[in-house]
View 1 (cartoon, rainbow, N blue to C red):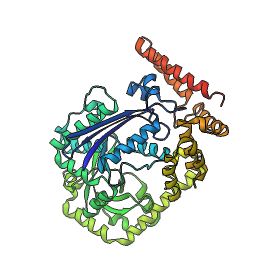
View 2: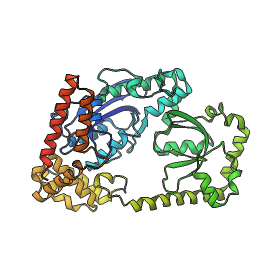
View 3: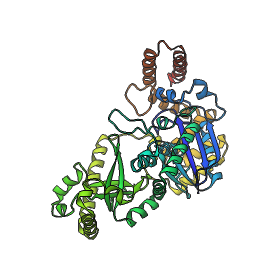
Amino acid sequence: MDYIFIDTESTGSSTVWDHITEIGMIRTDSNLNIKDTWEMRCRIKDGVVPNLGALEVTNFTIKDLTESNYSHLQMVEAIEKKFKEWGKVIVFAYNGQNFDYPLIQKTMYKSLKPPYLLNTEGNKQGDILNVIRAAKLVNPEVIETPISDSGNPVFKLDKLMKHEGAHGALADSRAMLSVAQKVYEKSNSVWKCSLLTLSRADSTNVIIKNKMFCQLQWFYGRLRKYLVHHFTFHPIFEAWSQCWDLRWKPEDYFELDDENLKKALTKSPKILRSFKTNKSEVILNYKHALDENPYKEIGIEELKRRVEILSNNLEFKQRVNKILQEIHDEKISLDKEIDKKLYPEEMLYTNFPKPEDKNLMKIFHQFNWEDKIDVIDKFKEERFSRLAEKLIYEEKPEVLPESTLKKIKREIAERIFSTEKQNWTTLPEFYRQIDEKRSKYENDEIKMKLLDEYDKFAQAIEKKYESA
């Protein structure tokens, strides 16, 4: 299969409320030789207030944000078309599991398109950040990294690979490919390991086949090795393997009553470590963990014995599953007490659309803008009706009834004029960011001019929606 190295630039860090402004993709063969490149930029959506931090990263001017020949939906349609043209591929992003992939999923969902474009229909997705961290752990010479104040390697892409046009989508895709090439050349065993866990099915097969393996987890600025055994799958989050950390002797927990077992399972350090089979986590051969205590001290024979008794104790596994269910139910109960309102944009993971609605989404995109109006109220779920309205508002607002226009503008106004801390950038927050930067750059004429442009852009948004 060919590989796609993909990067996005966006209006901010919210995968729900911000949106892609630029995308860059490089297609290679399985030996990482470039076959094709593709990039595209679109205009900012009407009513979206960008985050100033994101604008500074991309160096986008207001002209960049507003004068592209393509609307956001046109870019979404072009992305979908390009993936269909390329066929089955393995997609790589840098920290993609935490940002690019959910951003693309939610972008497609809000556009009434298939959200899991990158990891269905034979496609798989990986994360080069996971790969380079694992490779550096196995072979410190694989790449030179800056060192943080706490003495840990720093894996920010722009620090690893200096490149022209830093933070441009295609430039970042090229930098990511360069990192992948270093792993491929200098730590090929890690590269091959990373290809084994690019899908939920592949990951599940690996962890069941290997009775124990080296799991890698990143926290407190460092990648850590754990020797674990796949014990059970979470009763609710079925893609999450619950792995027993083999430093813990199983017999110490068999005789605990349910109350004390529950306490043991929730305390730190953890007995069970989650391995998310759908997040392309890199795992290594178990021998990589045997050179460190406590596993080295315990010894391979005792570790194998622990795996064996865990595998054979079905009753204990059932007790653990029951407790995991209880912990989840208690958390859900607390969340319900908060009673958080969800906007349609936030409901991708609520449930899968009904077949009728999936079919209607295809029909919606086949109609011209005037006829799309007739489709809006035919969706079974209200969230898709509301998303359809907003798509028409973003692309062809003049065809909407006046009552619908007013409703959408009022909702946008309520969000962007909010004075409370939100998951999106509000106008008061944007103005605050500008004032903060003006104090910092008061002697930088170029920066001050750019900030003035941002300020005027925000004022134009404010003027449009202040009477909504």
